[in-house]
Image 1: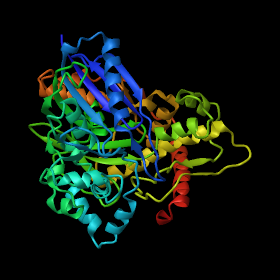
Image 2 (image 1 turned 90 degrees about the horizontal axis):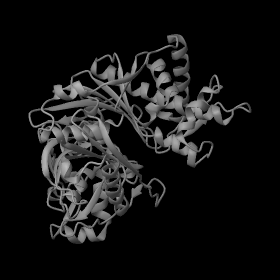
Image 3 (image 1 turned 90 degrees about the vertical axis):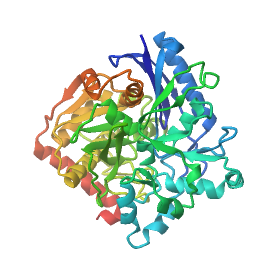
Image 4 (image 1 turned 30 degrees about the horizontal axis):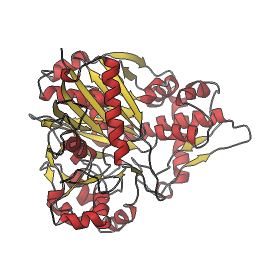
Length: 497
C-alpha cells in the first residue's frame, strides 16, 4: 500500500504529513522556524534552518507513521506564498536569506509606483493584485539590485529566483528541476492571469530578466523526482506544488464556484472559488489562481488578514500574559466581554480590505478594570471581526452569498473563536476532521498527478465534518459588537475615516 507525503513550509513552522488513500494521517512531523528581523520592517529566514525543518519534520513523520521510504508514491509541497529566495543555479547555495512575505522593504518602491496615474489599476487588471510590498515583485527587484553576488552572476546565467515552491522543487530534486506552479506565480505581481504566463511589461518595470524565474506549470504536475542523496534516501515524484492558502482551499475540497474557506494561521486568508471567469476588484480583495489542474484552472477572490496567529504569539512572547496558545480559550470564556476593549493587531499594517501598510497595532478602550483576560478575548474577537471584513467585501464584489464557511488551521481548536466567528458572520462555521488542509491539499495535488487518487469526486468523498458551529448570538448584538470594531478601525486608519 502506498502513501503520499505533503510538506508545508510555513512562516513560523514546517509540517510534514503522510496520508493514506482515504486521506487519513498516518504520521506527522513539526519543526518551528525562527524568524529574523535585521532591520525595522524587514523579516527573513535562514535558508539552512528552513531546509533543516523540512528534513527533520519529514524524518519525524516517517518515524511516527512507520511508513517506509519506498512506500512514498508522490511528494507535494506547499509554502508561504509571497516570500522570495534567490540561489546559485550551479551550486544550489542561496545568495541571501529568504525574504518573508511580511517584509516591508519594498514599501517605498510601492509608494513611488502608486503615484503614477492609473498604475495600481493597470497592475490589478493584469495580475489581480494590488501594488503592495506584500507581493513578491519588489522583493525580487531588491535582491537583484542590492546583493552584489547576484549582480555578478546574472551575466553567467547562474541566478535562480522565485517563490519557495521553486526553491523547494530545486532542493528536493538535487538542483535538476526549476519550476513554479500557477498559484505561486499568481502571488508575485508579475504573472498575467489572462495569459497565464509572466508579464513582459511588468518584468521590464521591475528590471527582472525572464531567465531568473521558474517556468510556471499547473499545481498538479510532474515537476521532477526527489534526489535520494539530497532528500533522506527518498526517490519519488514531486507532483504537487501550491501556495499554502490555495493548498487549504484544495484540501477543503472547495472545487466548485461559490465554495469558501478560511485558514487561521500566522496570517488569516479567506478564499472564495469564482470558477473559470476572472473577477477584478478595486475595493481591496485580490484575484488569484485557486488551483491549476492539467485540464483546467480555477480562480478565487481572496481576503488577507496579515496578523492572526501572530497576535497570539505576541501575547505569549511579547506581553507574556500566556505561556501557550491553548490557554486563550479558557481565558476568553472567563470574562463576559472585553469591557469595551478592541485590539487592532496591525503589527505590519493592514491588508484587505484596507491595504494600509503604514498602520500599526493599537489597543483602545482601556480602563483600570481591564485584565489580561480581557486583552486575550479582544485578540480573539479581532480575528473574527477582520475575517468578517474580508468576507463581506468578497460577497459584495462577486455577488455570491456565503451560506457556510469551511475553516482550518491551528485556531480551529479554539472553540470560543469558532463560535464567535459564527455569531459575527451569522452563518455556520464547519471544521473538518482533517484540519491540516494545507498539507492535505499539497498531497491531493501530487496524488492526482500520479493517479494515486483518480478524481476530484474521490477526494470529495474523503472530506468529513468534525464539528459545526451555528450562530447563537442575536443579530442586533453581533452588529453592535462589529460596529465597535469599525469605530476602532476608523481611529487607526486616517484614510478610512
